[in-house]
Image (tube, rainbow, N blue to C red; front, side, top):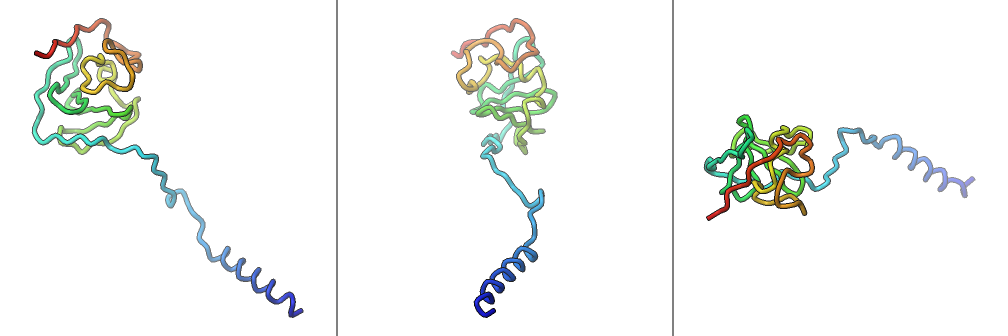
Length: 141
């Protein structure tokens, strides 16, 4: 009987730990996959220019891809889209399906930083609702 006592105590201790340990719920679990709001910092309203043939504006002097449509600001960096109600933010990451079709269809030549290895002209491949032919962006002087 004395030989079994340490085993019994260990089993009792393990059982007590299992009973007293709280189980994790969905609200306790946090997963970070490294996607964050892009570091867009704009301190003054940027000059905007209309993308020809669209209701979308872009900011040619901004350091990032910056588009404006229906008084909302949109940017894309590394395939991650974000939206803000004002040029100064706050920025929130959104899904591609939440980006308005006219913004998605903006031709690549109006991007400050073209997304990935895309061609230099025409709409990006995700622009399934394109606006037809676009006039080319005027050359910078």
